[in-house]
Image (cartoon, rainbow, N blue to C red; front, side):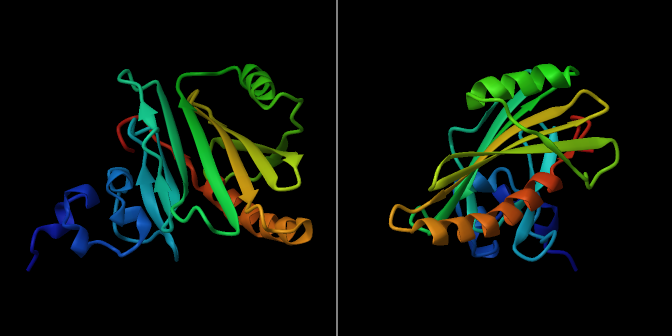
Length: 202
């Protein structure tokens, strides 16, 4: 017999009944979490405030409270990172969701200006039908690797994403490069998990 908890969203549940991981124990992040059922080991479904997209959210990350959505639901910024600020390599995602926008070249030019350089975008195979993803890498210094990603679909929905992978100051250059290679794979998985919705959560 159901106790009614299955129909509650994570933000409505008692934190003691939620997974004991930062994604659910952080009050602000909890508002974005769609379900307590893992989509794969270590990842849970997150849904954006505009209902514009979902993604596989790492359990050990939290959403920054500077994230925001515009009331007209045409724009949203979503920022998230590891809860532990003292780990060897820190990932920080900054996603700007925009709809409608159809001029991909304009978007790339805008991202070039934000990066302060010409980005060399390379296509990745998208996980969802009628979606496209291109990624460029920036290496501003030995301790930072930035992945710039542009994701769009045939319905004029788009996400412009900059993800910084930053090594702690005491990590040497070679170890940092190795850590960034590992984190690059994790970041790419999250980027490819982004799925655009119709604005109604579907």
